[in-house]
Image (cartoon, rainbow, N blue to C red):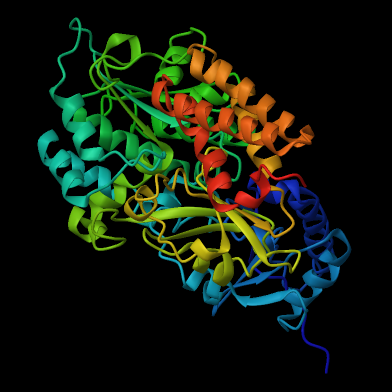
Length: 534
């Protein structure tokens, strides 16, 4: 007996940039055509004239399943994916008949091990709704952290953040509570109403990272709430979101979310917050991910790194005390205020508390975003969540922490991803980017790329970074063409000396961290840098 066809009430399809890149907009157009056709065919007297609502959402971060659609059922949402143009009609037929028999049916999405084995704090609402629906946000614990902050004095908010142990998620891992205390206590220059600032560093430029973009496109009110809390704590009346120019979809969504926040009296001089928040789009310079270069750009100047001290907490934007955090750090604040600092501290490790979104990409079967407690092993992410390499070959290396992060061999994959375990080796988790390579990768070529990347993206202000990156790339390129072992050894010594110089004398992390991928490759894959003739 043929199942009865009945259109579902709601379908959900990601409008996230990554989903769009693999065809989500085309899938949406086809689905809408099918929905409209079904509505016409059922518009006879006595027929069920309910029309399916197609809702574009953010992403759940299950990028290996994109583009995917979810259908609302009494048991929960059932997912289908990854979809192609050729199967949309038959998938639509399957979900209308409620048979759930199509090969692309993944079952209840909340029961997928990929999601069940995570601990989502920041991304718990991503992919579930239209990101611009403020009502949905407030119905799902949104603004509760802000409401709690309104009942506290600034120092009480700061103490709650200190209790949580929150560390900056931009890479350095500096304790957020210490930075807040510094800005709170700093004396402003002059007596203007905007004497202190809160700045969100949303210039997410590291390859293999997409958590900032995903949350800005999928849950923008979380970021706004986090900035409201931070502003109240440090006494700031004005703030900026510094967004990279390569994120046009995030710009559009954030602009709309800010307009809604102003219309809802969350923002504005005469609102309860008294806080004005602006969106600023950068000009595409990677170096503006460094906080002082970002502040120079915000002031309308070239994005050149400032010497420190003074720190931005003392003299930041327009020489005023400024709290600078990245997106993920600010987005952790609503949960910390809502649930309490001690609850946040229960997740992760003693010295690296809380959750961390790790972004898995490269040569891996199941790429995407995994949010879990700090201290998870690299192997668990790459093998359990990622399913190993996409090529099926053995893992050759995993780069942790973006283009300036370390390359780790297979025998170090049981290393914990936290500030302490990685810091003991001179590395760090960075922004949580995890890029996988199989055993066919070329360590020497990757080392050359690290120098080339620095050469291209350096602001050029300091000599070690500006010249060291050029000479490093040249030395390794010459190494590949040397025939005599002695000459090859000389080139490697030049590289080692350059790395020491850049690490100890560069003005900012751009120059001081460029040696990390190079030296980690030389240490863990020495055969590729041997001075012996090959």
